[in-house]
Structure formats: C-alpha cells, structure tokens
Image (spheres, rainbow, N blue to C red):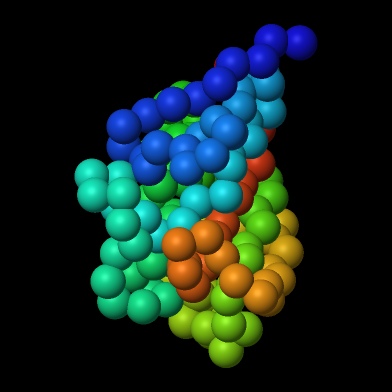
Length: 129
C-alpha cells in the first residue's frame, strides 16, 4: 500500500500533529475541516452557513491535492456544535453534493476546536481509468 500525506496552501494548515489528508491509493481520507480561512487561520464570519461553505471548500482543496473531486466522495462525517444548525447545514451541503450524494453521519458534539460551529471530514475513492 502506498501512503502519502496531503498538504495544500488552499486549505488551513493542520493545528496539531496530523495531516490535512492521507492518500492511501485508491482511498483518500481528509482530516476534519472547520470553517477556517486558510489565508488568515481564523474562522470565517457569518455563522453556520459561511462556516459550512468554508469547511466544504477546504475539503475540496484537499481532495484536489489528491487529484480527486467531490464526485469521488463516498462518505462524510459532520460534527455540529448545535444540532439546531442541521437544516442550514443541509442547504449548504446539498449544493456541494447534489447528484448521488455520499453516505453521511451527523453528530452533535459538545464543542469544536476554535469555537467552530461545524467540522466535516470526507472519504473519497480514486476512480481508475
């Protein structure tokens, strides 16, 4: 098995001892992404909608670093600081995964790093040609 750490400036740098993602060909695993702007290292303003967009954009950047896309995602896990944000999250999430969305689990958690409202991780499978 090949295993390669993924790193891109288009997603926030890891804030601990972990990789932004791992390419274990053909599997791609992203670390949980918060709504952090990779340029500033801070959470984006605007609440759950903007944080969810930024988290999904960050996932997209890590996927791109592995040469895959949202279309290759087979499973996501979503962590919400407030389950009342579930409907707003779904609206944003659906705009990224509209056709044949991946399997998903969503959990309410006590707290997220940096006071975030949402964290999302993804698993993708590289398609063979």
